[in-house]
Length: 336
Image (cartoon, rainbow, N blue to C red; front, top):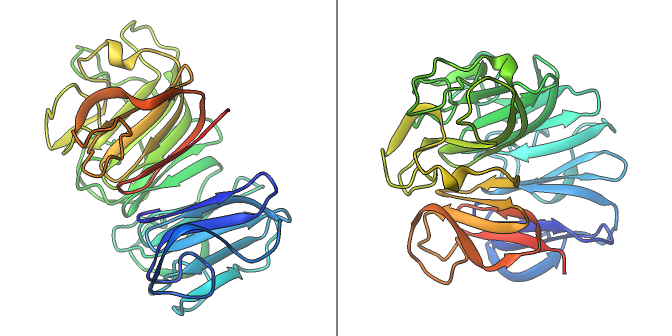
């Protein structure tokens, strides 16, 4: 989350820690800071969890969806704007597959591959064609594999592995070669920056992973086109702190949609995980964890507070199997 973290342990118990100003920890209180993991409830029935800026949602083993924390714009999906300090079930559906949170909105995918979104919609981030908030889940057109939320925007992969983004686009984070907000899922404009190539046909790219930060987006993809200068990791949007790994602070707003940059070697194959934080990015490449971008609070894990413009190894580089970035902190799991 922005300033809190949650995780599901191997015994399927759910734990959260960090900032709890709006009840996002889920332990029945608010206006606290939890400096060590606190169990949410007492059940061992959780499958996955997604923290947002000030609210949290999770799915249990019966595929029910639960949310708690801040709810001033309906981001909990409960039909009202009353905050909840403990997990509260969203509707009655028992077929939720995944859930992701942006700043003040929530989206989830059901086992039917249907996408639903709710909460704040001031930038069109619910993908419904308007800017009206929703207090309960509303279906977004299409069939979807996965979705991730950033700062007032979402990006999602369709059932045909094409990529769509919508919502705020002030930094070009939607990847459509504009800075115009979009209120419906909009195709990402694929282009290999710095090369004399036209737009890459959508059919030549199959997206496998997408991750949304505050103002930038990254994704992993498979490419089957004719150009040789390709990579399986791409980032686009704000580059204010080097979070696009373009070897320098090339532009504050990198509008060239998907941009692999001029670094060459930094973009070699082998990426298996990627996560975008507030103004930094981390990924697992050939089992090694690498991070780049803002490092004010040591979120790059390299024992410094110096920003990086290209991927750099963390202090413990190997054995990483999972990674997740908050606004200015990073959490990972290792195979030890």
